[in-house]
Every structure is written in C-alpha cells, then in structure tokens.
Image 1 (tube, rainbow, N blue to C red):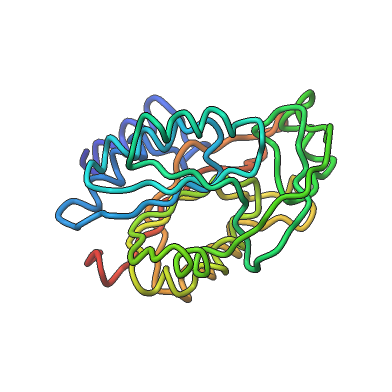
Image 2 (cartoon, helix red, strand yellow):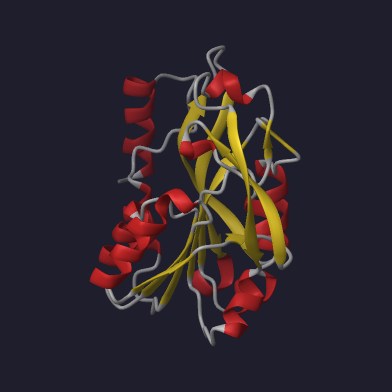
Length: 243
C-alpha cells in the first residue's frame, strides 16, 4: 500500500488523533520485510496457547518455532501442539537477562500475567482481569544461553508479548540479536501499568544500540481517558535488511 494512499485512508477513516495506527496486518508486513531471506529459527516469547506460533509456522514454512511460556495454564495445549507439529518446540520457562528462577504474577485475566508486578493503573486497562490471583515460581532463561545449550545456530525473528518484561528478555539475547536476528516484533508500553516494567523508550534505545531501527507501530490501545497505553512494534536490523 502506498504511503500516500495509506495516509489518506488514515485521515478519512481513522481521524487525525490516532495517527499511530497502521492499516496493514503486522504479520503480513513481517513476511514482506523478510522476503528473500532464509528464515530458519523464530522465537515466540509469551506463546500462551500457541495461536501466534501457528501463524508464524504457516508464514515461514522452512522455520522452526521455539515457544516460551511459563504459565502452567497452557502446558497441555502446547505439548499437544508439539506432537502434531514437529517444527514447534515449547519451552516452559520465561525469558530474562539472567538464568535462575523468578516469581510469575498470574492474574485473573491470563493475558496480564507477568514477571512484573501489576500497578494500580493496570485496572484502568482491565478492571476485572488485573488482580493477581496467585504467584508461581518459574524457571527463567536467557536467549543466548538457551541457544548455546540447545545448539541453536540462528534466530532470525523474535516475537515478544510478555507484559513489560520485554527489555530484560532482549538484554539476555545480545549475542543472538547481533549475530543472526533480522526482525523483532514486540509489545511496547508507552505508559506504565506494571511496576518496574519496560517502556517503549528503553526498548527502542537498546535495540538501536544493537543495530535495529523502528519500522512501524501497530494496534495501539488507549485507556478510558484517551491516553495511549500500549501497542505492537516492528524493529528491523537496518544493515542486514538494507532498509
């Protein structure tokens, strides 16, 4: 879609105020950006029930998808999926900047579950599902150490949806990012709803320091007062993709 037509469509249909909205489907954009590049390894961090992993497997038919999900709620679904799909590999751990264990805050709505502690402002986003119902100790890994331990040579795509813990996971992937990663697709938070959670600014700075640039932002969400809260963002490795 041309930039001119896209801009016109945004103004006519979406209005002037929500100008971060892209009208393209992010996974279609990811495939387009990576056209002509060999994609052999994909990380799905925050895999939940595997629905995004399924999309990634279809879009990258030569790739293996490595899914990380610490919430026991999804263990059986992911295990069953791995039996049906040999290119799907679940790991029941969380990603961080160190290895060991950490407390996982399991919330009433599973989508809010995080290694970060929910702040009161999360109730503005999800009044019912923000409450922590239990805390579970889980294994944490770094992507770099995991890759070494499992003899994973290349990860070209990383997807993160881990509720404001994305920066810690990225810091544990410095070698992988520099050696093989072409694209990062991540949830990003513009205003905090988790205590000590990473914001977009920190993720952007870290990735720029490692050769990446912001490509586009998708599906922004707003609180009831109209303040932007979070969105999804594509970051690209500038030199390797030539963009």
